[in-house]
Image (cartoon, rainbow, N blue to C red; front, side):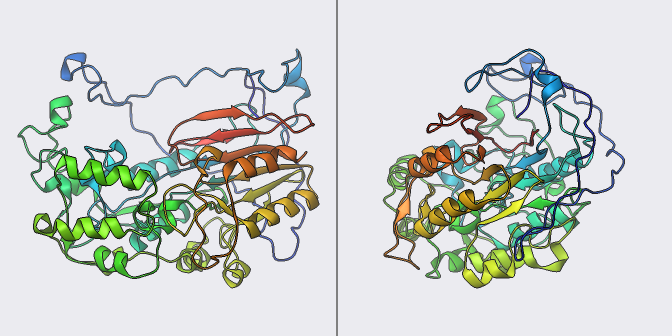
Length: 480
């Protein structure tokens, strides 16, 4: 995967064979379209605009140098001439398309964890649209120039498990009008207009926690971030993998008993909290002590006097796994295909969110569901899925396989039973890694969740070459 230097584009490979009955169709290669015009690069703010480690404007620049890694094999001379492209794909992960006015959000935990709220979150949909346009402008894989086969998302496509966010995600990926605004249209009711010092208030001149680090006064920012947009949709076939934020309210809590729906569609939103209270609560969440959200509900009840009134919106309702799959299967969201983006009517009937599909003549793609519906943001595999993965790798017609999931092996330590299958065993990341290392087909396990770029060489179990584990944040990655 990859290489030290770019090489000339290779000839197109033969057309993909017909997949087995009931499998998602193989990706079809679209006709090239003209590159999307790009705005000139921004000029970085001068160093005096912020303290060290503070705000800087982004600017375009050269990419990181490509490196030859010899963790798994020795790099031999002449390898560029011997290469054969097996697949070329783009990875999206952890887009976290977020309704920043959603009552279920816990921005007030910012003092306890940086992941609770980030100043740029209102731009999640705008940023994802720019990403779609950028991918549409690519002419091939960066290392080989080979035509791109597909885009795969590896979960946390949404942030609050909300119906509106899922609609935005599917509209961006397959094309259509997207308006990242909820509640009272045109009237922002989130933390960035609340006058609270903990958050960047772009429309106010007064200082706040982020302006002290150089964040600017930007009147009109929130109106621009929530304006209607139109996405062209991807030009490439795309496939979907689920993450914990797609199925669990807040990305943390087991769904199903109605409390999350009541809060999400209600008219009260908590925006601030005593720092000590938030830190104590978050310690219990990270320790896995609140999988069902009991402590969260207690916190909201105790802090009700601090909540602010917001405009309720039924579009903020949590989606069930069945609704999530049905939305993917909606013909309005087929876009460049395939229909369902990996999921099929059979997936709905069997209540499974994992599948296999042909990437090319020689490569099988496998998408896993690592979300534990028993609650908590870490994951695992149910025994049924684990055995399916084992059989799929053993019986595959293709000599190679790429495995996709949301969670990394290191974040698959949550083995709580699925409430729908209380007696079924769950497998952790070490078990999955061991299984993949035993298979002679697996080239890589590609995932997300950590929001960090990392490639982890994994030793094989008596074979060569061993698989790689690749983890990426919200950015495109092309493997070829």
